[in-house]
Amino acid sequence: MTIHLDGRALTFGLFVVFILLTLGITVWARATTSGADDFYAGGRTLSGAGNGVALAGDYMSAASFLGIAGIIALSGYDGFLYSIGFLVAWVLTLLLVEMMRNTGRFTMGDVLSRRTREQAPVRTAAVVSTVTVSVFYLLAQMVGAGALVSLLLGIHEGRRFLGMSAGTAKTATIVVMGVLMVCYVMFGGMKATTWVQIIKAVLLMAGAAVMTVLVLGRFGFDVSAMLGSAADASGRGREFLQPGLRYGQDVPGDTARTVIGKLDFISLALALVLGTAGLPHITTRFFAVPHSRAARTSVSWAIGLVGLFYLMTLALGFGAAALVGRRAIVAQDPSGNTAAPQLARAVGEHVGGRVGGEVLLAFIAAVAFATILAVVAGLVLASATSLAHDYFGQVLMLGRPRESQEVAVARFAAFLVGSLAIVLAVVARNLNVAFLVALAFAMAAAANLPAIVLTLCWRRFNSTGVVAGIYGGLVSSLVLVFFSPVVSGKVDPVTGANLSLFPKGVDFHLFPLENPGLVSVPIGFLCAVAGTFAGREKADPERYDDLSVRALTGAGSH
Image (cartoon, rainbow, N blue to C red):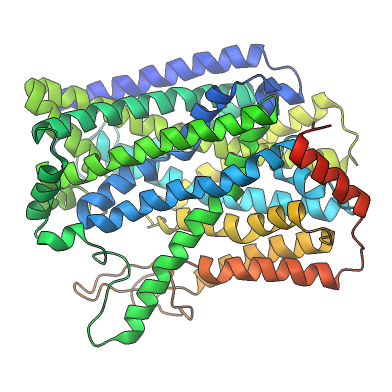
């Protein structure tokens, strides 16, 4: 895929249009944001449908749009398993969302501390978990943004863009992305972030729908013909449409590697399914609606949109395999992240010639940019809210801060978190940090989910159990990943290429799985239970009864 100068200019122009539009929304949001309710929860005036669209926008990251389409294009059936995992996760979220919204005010820390006497340790643990999960997820998104936007603009080594070298352009992309997300959160709070996500979700669904129609139209709207053509073009034949090409592969003569591969896939699926309900930027969004019915409506809309979108990724992935071809996709990006843009150009050219290809490619590139920007803004907002409300307002100020103080701290926290993310992303811009997305889901599943579920459902649960569960899940996830093949010791058995974070020859991996969820999630639950029995604090039955009434009825919420 060679992006000519006019194509690059058109893509860049659409980027600028989106930036100006969202900055205009931020100025409006700043003028209508006055207190903590406005900054953290958008004044709780968002409808269930609007919040559901924003939720879908928050959830459908660049990994969903470009990553899954690329995995399907290169790995066929196994790539679609990612889509299934992301979608099934909402079933669990649907069960918890109403209770969380009813028992909290702005953050996960509100939910976890509702029934505990020792507020400070619980709030602090919630802050540590929220910021850790958000920063890891944020880093992966921003590093990916630098590489992806460079590819979409056609910025390669030896070529210049706006007078910058390829490396400088990638760094500039990361910095611009970071500055924009900080502006959205610092000045616009939840209102600006919400509208950025709604606009992004609408653009993403529209772009995916147009491409799906164009792809299916090439095959006479015969899905079977598309799948058959994709299988033929893949070089794998019918195996392309069957499980086992990427995950859970059978390794002849090596039972251990076969078992590890299957367990690794189960571990990944577990993290994806259980982690969504514990992702901070997802949970905070449910506090932006006025009542529990709107929270349920939000999830229903999100499930509908996310489900439809992941169905369309089938057409995008298999369509790219059939119309672009594996060789062209891998030549542009070995991980397949540019499969969807390449497909956009191919189907656009078929309909409107070279101009049509450039226009559709530029639009999809701009949608990818918007996708990344909306997700990182949501992550920064979640971190800033937790730092200001939980730590400053409830721990340092003992629950008696002035609203103006807390909002000012939230804005400053957004600046700090955003600045940290920019620095880390620039430092790690040339590293393979794709595993951080799976790690963020695993940490959310291992640290946040046990604490949330046991707080809502176990009468005896206490503050020691909350703290032990959160730190146990976080630490176990980080330690297991550090000693896993994604950090050291992983080598491609065919090409001999290094696939780990550390250079080839450095090997200290002790844990065989690349995804820690299968082990870290049980550890998180065990630590929470053990901490409850080991703690000297006795659970307060009255607090639990009050929480149960709030969770089930919404009485007295907020």
